[in-house]
Image (cartoon, rainbow, N blue to C red; front, side, top):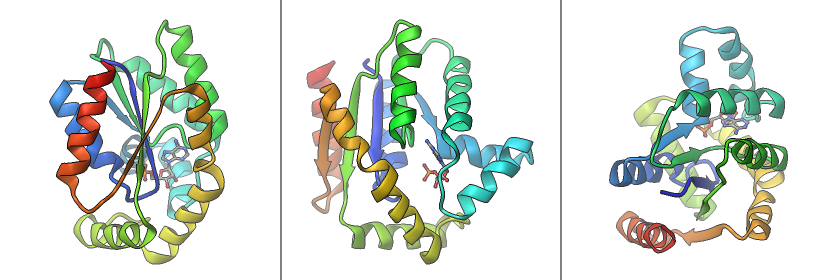
Length: 190
Ligand code: AMP
C-alpha cells in the first residue's frame, strides 16, 4: 500500500477514518496526537512540555515534533504502508516528512483531505468532550485550534496539491459515503 497522509481540521474525522483504513488494509498508523497524549499520561518530560501547548490549543514546536515523528516511524518496523494522522501540520513538518521518507527509500504516497463545515466540527468536538473528556475539547480551546488550523495548517493543502498528491473529500452528511469514496480512491491509486 502507498503511505497515506490524513489531513483536516480538528474534528474532521482524521482518527476515525484512519482506524477504518488501517483495519481494512492492515496498514501502520501514527497519530501524533495519540503519541503526545500517551507521553502526558506517562508523565514524561516530553509529555510535560507537550501538555502546555496542547491545553492552550497551540502546536508543538516543529523541531520537537519532527524528532518525535521520525522516532515513532522508525519504531514501527515493517508495515504495509503507514497512515500519518495529524502530521504534518506545518510546511516545515511537510518538508521534513518528505526528506525523511526519501532518505528511507520511501515517499509520501497520497494525501487525503477531509473538508467539513465549521458548525459540524464544533458540534462533533463538543460531543467528543462529553464522551472522552479530552482536556483540549472545550469551546475556548477549540476556537484557538481552529484559528491555528486556518493560519498554520490549512495553507499546507496547496503544498500537497503542488506535490500532486492531494485528494479532497467533502463531508455531505454520511460517514458511509465518505468511507466508500475514500476506499475507492485508495484502491484506484494502489
Ligand atoms: P490531535 O489529536 O491530532 O487533534 O492533536 C492534539 C494536539 O496535539 C494538537 O492540538 C497539538 O497541540 C498537538 N499536535 C498533534 N500533532 C501535532 C503536530 N504534527 N504538530 C504540532 N502539534 C501537534
